[in-house]
Length: 267
Image (cartoon, rainbow, N blue to C red; front, side, top):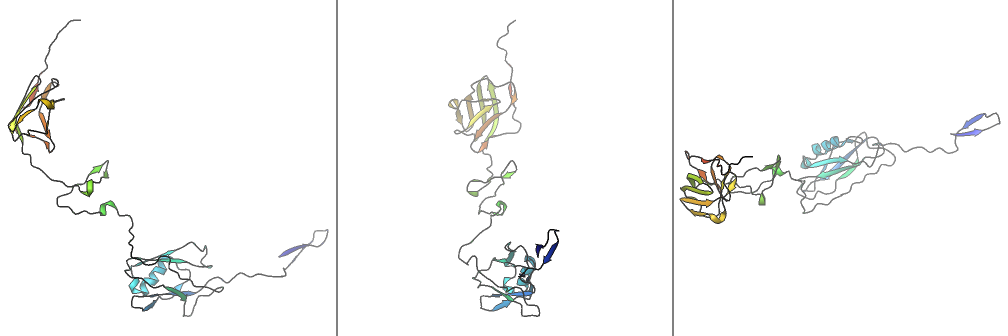
């Protein structure tokens, strides 16, 4: 409407404009979707109301087109703010091991066809069928690796850790050596037993470790020298190899490290 000033008394006269522009008719009615199977047979949905959401459209397609059942996902785009102005959907095909011909959209042939201001129907393929495979990220717990031995789960601060080459193989190796006697005199250590290691081992008494250069070992006895006298108390010899710690036989007496007073002085 155009307001016109008519006099100095500020009388306002409202008159209609010379030209009137009307808005286009909004969408209303039903449409259908047609898809062709691998045998070139057309399958058409029942009538779909223009404002239906993506879930209803997906149900309409899968209910009427059996070869697409459980194989599509319908997603509505945000191209149009109001459904009365237009609707756009993307149909994602999943697990369809064939090139599906272009589906088409058309007005319903029933009593309520799609109406509006010259409605148009556009159907395009956004990603062609090909030989490439696309995978969503695979959760770690779903990954599997062939193994010939039992596997263990390794956690670091509660977070699963990966083993080298995805192989967390666990193999129990029965102890072959056994300590049957142990003693310490000053810094000299004597260990007796069966199948004791002769190379590649360490000997620890309390807080002290034998000098590797002092090792003298046969399968029934190990002798070595500590760098210092161990801390006083009862303890056991720890003989460690790359396969673990050599077991101590039941009933073997602990090593008693006595407190030795070497100097007494007065203040």
